Length: 88
Image 1 (cartoon, rainbow, N blue to C red):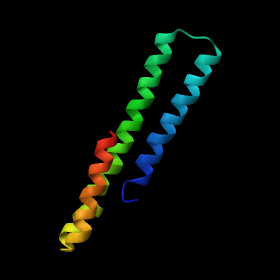
Image 2 (cartoon, one colour; image 1 turned 90 degrees about the vertical axis):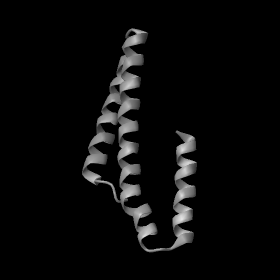
Image 3 (tube, rainbow, N blue to C red; image 1 turned 180 degrees about the vertical axis):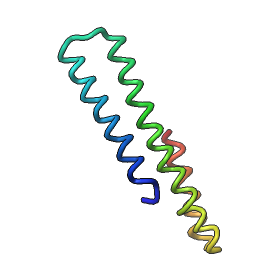
């Protein structure tokens, strides 16, 4: 992985902490909309994490494939990204 591992791990640990908090809110029978807001916050952090990983992939793996002049590898990278974007 070419992304900043420290940053990615920090974001994922934050999301994990939020999810643990959400589980506690459910156990404590907190208000539905308060739980929903926390779920959306966790989703936002996961989205930001994924963006960081994809950004690094573009800057390194995809860029390298084009710089090396390997058309097959470059085409494969484009297809991989297309599949990922389709899942977003």
